[in-house]
Image 1 (cartoon, rainbow, N blue to C red):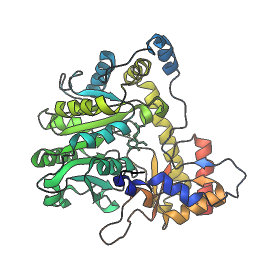
Image 2 (image 1 turned 90 degrees about the vertical axis):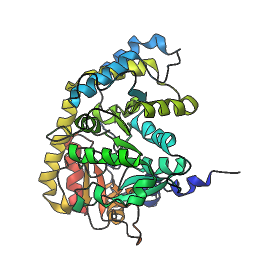
Image 3 (image 1 turned 90 degrees about the horizontal axis):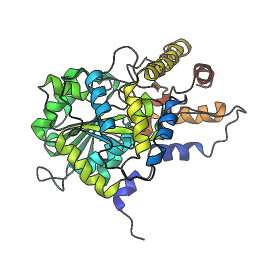
Length: 397
Ligand SMILES: Cc1ncc(COP(=O)(O)O)c(C=O)c1O
């Protein structure tokens, strides 16, 4: 059978590597496994999701336009305006917003709509932080771009150093994925940093895609967003798309609901791609999502869960493994010396599954994988379970 050989380098993606690493190991512990490898909130989303679905149950027989419902787009525009203190009317519900079934799809489609056959006479580049969420790399490669990894080590605040990107790579860049708060490190880009990234996108004419799916999970201050930076630069959304999600904000990854917002040409590009490759979201789902974007109480209680878990991590880990309290997101990014070895020990001896940092990182030109010393730990269970897990971790490691 003929297969697309572009997919070959993507076969060993993070969770397949994890499965291959851990499947030969039988945990010695009798306790049920504790799965801290996946960023899946373990608490329940608000019960009103079911109410909204039931109220709209007569609409399951409808196809929905890709643009979703006007109510959904209005709720999102209002949320963006409130959350990022945008000038009234800067975000237009009908021109700048599109629902997507989870931010993953939006992030993936962004490469399909932005990567041309060639740029500056060369193969187009996709600028991608290292480490990062695997979807950016997959989207770039499938769309025909070459991933150019931008180191995001501790020394640069766990964000790519924008001044260190080679001009040749900026010139041939078609897309630049940024993530703030960053998965896995939880670092948050300032408005100034985002402004500089936007200016680069405009100067070198590429699409800046800012993955803000953890924007609502933060410790103290709400993380700034790229639209806020657009406002500070005068209000144009040119060359910018942000991706948001209810998966983390509302603990509803099963709802498959997010949105993209940004430059009108990009939104049109999304619609062009979606018309051929995706289904519009169902109206009952959009109704539930509309309500979730309009309510904040459940989001604040979610933030409280993660704050308590990070209090616990500070107490139990007490600075070990370079433990720090991330400004956003719900992961610990721990320097354990050898991530894959630590993951094997934690699984074998305690039934705790974590993701080795190496599986979210790509080797540099010398072959060195700078994510190798790390593990990513998703702090997604309740306090008693996290206390058990963290104490076991300190015993095993
Ligand atoms: C950085 C990042 N972006 C996007 C996503 C996709 O989430 P969803 O498609 O559920 O919105 C995830 C999921 O874990 C993620 O970690």
